[in-house]
Length: 126
Image (tube, rainbow, N blue to C red):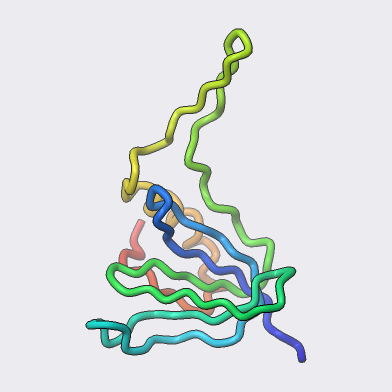
């Protein structure tokens, strides 16, 4: 069975950052979920795994599916580390759940719109 290679981008609970997963597509779409009539979801098999996984979004969804692998990586949470006298310090780029994580990433990923399979981002603008 020849499965379609995809890249999934979605928001996580970890500081509100965006996660990237390379996978094989099984199914995607919208459906009833709690009080939401058209909540986006995706079923997939992660690269190097065998079991089907699912991501379901509801309030203010951020779920994007691109064709193929080797698409852009997500932005790191930290600025460059600084080493002073053997002590390494890192500074967060933005505070927790700052919308600029999504805004910055949208500026980059919107350049790849020809690869979009499905775009379930609540705020697609730059």
